[in-house]
Length: 248
Ligand SMILES: NC(=O)c1ccc[n+]([C@@H]2O[C@H](COP(=O)([O-])OP(=O)(O)OC[C@H]3O[C@@H](n4cnc5c(N)ncnc54)[C@H](OP(=O)(O)O)[C@@H]3O)[C@@H](O)[C@H]2O)c1
Image (cartoon, rainbow, N blue to C red; front, side, top):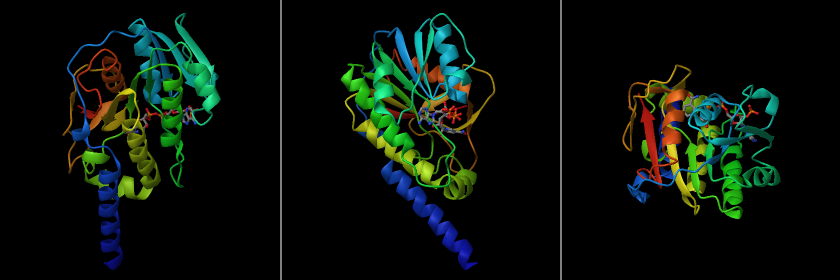
């Protein structure tokens, strides 16, 4: 019983920590203007589930896409408007080389090194933002997650009291730090916080806003719909400088 109570206290403390460390949407500086459509996109995390959706849908929308990948052979997408470059977000030189000539950056960076502290998301994103500044690229759309900042707890009880405290505490801590790094940058940024991701197809109908998610049940959305929303942010000013949640 004591152990159980201690665990609940730990899970609650972690949730409060993620709430404090992640971004609060009220610091946002939005404007509703439509922005000039960029034509050349750099996609980070392109070989992942969301990344593949971003690459596919960006090509369908007519963008000229550069995909940054640690192992380019993993992407398995070929298209005349697609260039795959080898790079690692932790290696600034490779990120800076990929940034040359780009007009916007979309990131679905993630990893599976859950069980020890890492700074891959925050330090990798810092490198991306530094390379953007060096090459005069301003628009940055980045996928993080519900459960951070003012969305803490909104992934539902199962995630708040099991998945995040037991499997993902280091990962989420780094994600919260990643949001702070983005918010402190000079980029024109949009943070996109999805619920639990699925590989279902694109519905094109989903909810988005600052106060979504659920404290009890788990909310979901497909990677395809997240990619759709993220790409929409390249031409919209509606969520600039905010962390916006998306779910079905
Ligand atoms: N799974 C969920 O239910 C869920 C819910 C909410 C939010 N999210 C977040 O959404 C994001 C996308 O998730 P996902 O499951 O679609 O993607 P994912 O399959 O985890 O893919 C992550 C991508 O990041 C790349 N990457 C990792 N370390 C890198 C490095 N050092 N340099 C360059 N690239 C690197 C991976 O490359 P490799 O192929 O080389 O590993 C991969 O392309 C993640 O941040 C995730 O935490 C996930």
